[in-house]
Length: 165
Image 1: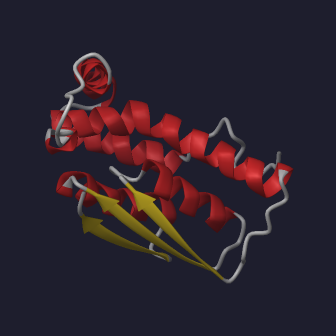
Image 2: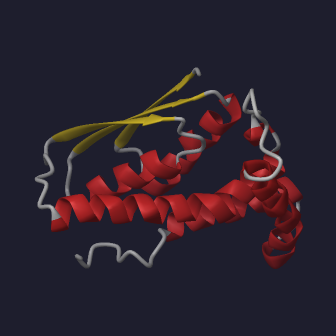
């Protein structure tokens, strides 16, 4: 695989965004904020597995502690996994990425785990114009996606969000 942002590196800007978010949510700094969010990580993990509702999927992200927990613990894993898959299809399978413009559609985007990862990867490959379209049922997740994508991608990537099921 290439040397562009090695797979074992999650962007510092992404990590910084979610650390700052945790500090705002908890009104604590550094390790104390992370310690406070730990119980929310466990709660969210349970909601994704053993306590998962059968019918209507709740808006986990309306709780700012759960959103922060997601951003700090689950989002980096999805980001890196998405990047790995893209590297496989572009490098191992030799998919030629268009360099002029690219549109990304992220269905069930949440706060941007996969869509922002895609845009970040393609930006590193030199795609000059990227449009990220994100759809989610959570207005709170979409509201978090916008500043998160700006922190990671800068303002050269056009981000459009839409709420829906």
